[in-house]
Length: 63
Image (tube, rainbow, N blue to C red; front, side, top):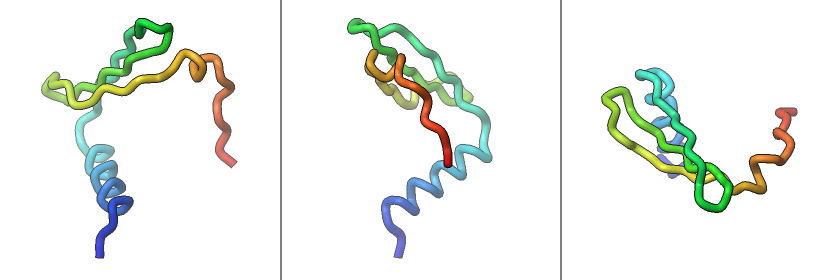
C-alpha cells in the first residue's frame, strides 16, 4: 500500500535523478521572496513563497 509520503518521496527521487531544476528568486511585494521553479525545458513548474520573517531567521541545523 502506497501512502502520500511514499509517493512524494518517489517523485523527489525521480527529480533528483533527472535534470536539475532552475530556481529563480524574485522579491515579493511584502519584502519576502517568490521562488519560481523551472524544469529543464524552461517551463514554470512551481511557485513558492518565503515570508520576510523567515529570510532573517537563523538556518536550521540538522542533528
